[in-house]
Amino acid sequence: MLNLLSYFCAGSGSKRQAFARLGVAAELERSLAAIKNESANMTLLIYTVFGFLAVGALGAHWSFSSLIEIEHTKFHDQWVADGKPIGGKSARKEATFFSPSMPRELFYRWMSSTPDWIAQSPEAQFWHRHLRFWGILFHITFFAFIAVIINSFR
Image 1: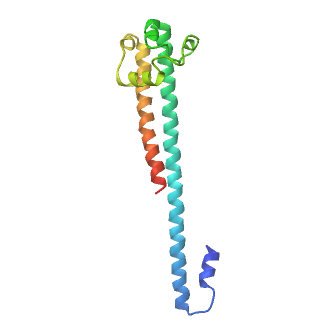
Image 2: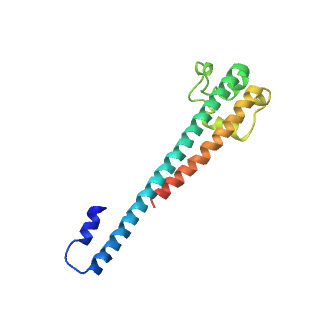
Image 3: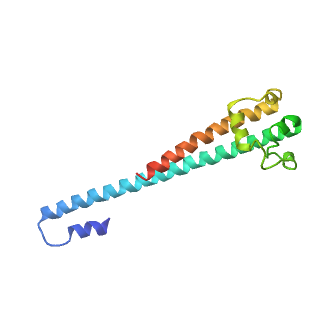
């Protein structure tokens, strides 16, 4: 700032012109500081939303894998009927990657409705509630992240 002020104050001219130049320099410095502060706030917002997005994705994935594990071990017939989806620890050996019911479709089906086998198991109900919570958090923060990114380029 001192170099900028000395630049505007240097040279010949009256004191009035020097003070006018100082006013312009001070206004320029304030504007630059505001832009820098706004940029820092936007960066913090992007990182915060991205953090919630990552936590939501990890929580939804963990909950979904736990539900597939429960379905595979306790409700094996239903797991086969769902197309042997990939997920869980023990379900991986028998799972087919190109099953008729891909895990994404199953994820959205379980987000919107509760299968009968989940209603029969308290452990599955626990993970189903977590799946819905983390899935909703992920989707809300996904759209918020897109909005923040678009807004940062304006």
